Image (tube, rainbow, N blue to C red):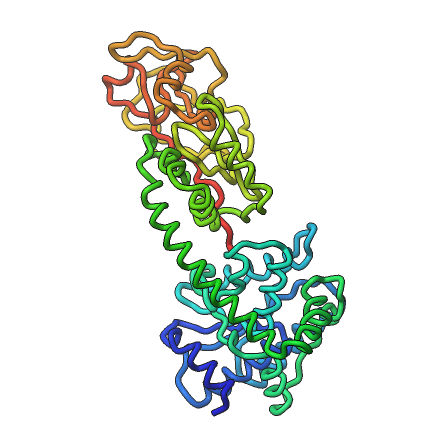
Length: 440
């Protein structure tokens, strides 16, 4: 058994009981070697079922022939192949957009507990570290690629991170493996290609072990990031606290707990908390956090990030995304008693507990000037009532209101008039949950 095969087996030992191994198969050198190694191993031992996924981005004419090549290779090795065709969004970074589309496709296809095996190696790790270093990344970025991480319902595993590109190429040549050469890999307008073709060879002339050493540094930084994550988890447990609005299913933190931490721990906590929710800001953009944190008590500051917004209300930080950031259409929904859930376009669902008296009942949103007859308290302005209850500003315009004709009778989840309360009537609202975080 070669050293390459031995390292592969050691790396995959913890994943031997997975329901399936799926290989990210581009048809290039690295993934072709990984596919060949696994097919050979599977002929000798019982392994989880192996199949491959080829993502076709359609970004260049040459790529149209690659699925056919991959089909032929997999057929020869007796491995099932799925070809996933994706649309790559336009944007400032074609590389990033293609990566996002690729990993989204992989994540969608992984079933519970399945493992996606990707063929990044030691040289890739070194180039990633150098690339992130030149971009001014922090510890999380400099930790480069983890050996494994969650993806979809399963896990992404990189079993060749301890192997060099030279080892993979030697294996391919000795076994007669034919692979695809992507023409874009020669385009040095792409930063990673420039590093791979110009910078790394120059560094290797002076420091022959540069790739191994940089990859080792990425491993050390990965351990440092793990310690930072453990510290953030401790801080997160303390900062979650208890919201007065248990029915509001939004990520939130207690601001008073967060601001007791040092500035560095605040940023570490927020990075950890926000990482599954949005792409993280660069160093300069963190001024937005200071502005939000330090704003006057009666202010309603907002920190806008790539995939959502951080709001401050009721002494808490609230993460808003998805439907919460889209304006609502006016609502005037005629209704009688309804026990089944009723969908509100872009605003979750409502249902009614109890029986309404005869009348012209409508669901509407707040327009201003409404008042409510409260049990034992007389008539109160809705604005004042919401202020007393400290309802976050971003919620108020979305609260479903129940009217009898033009008379306000109930505010979802909060209060109902004395006229219907005796009958046990309650208006329940299940707000939208927002976007479900990043998928890659």
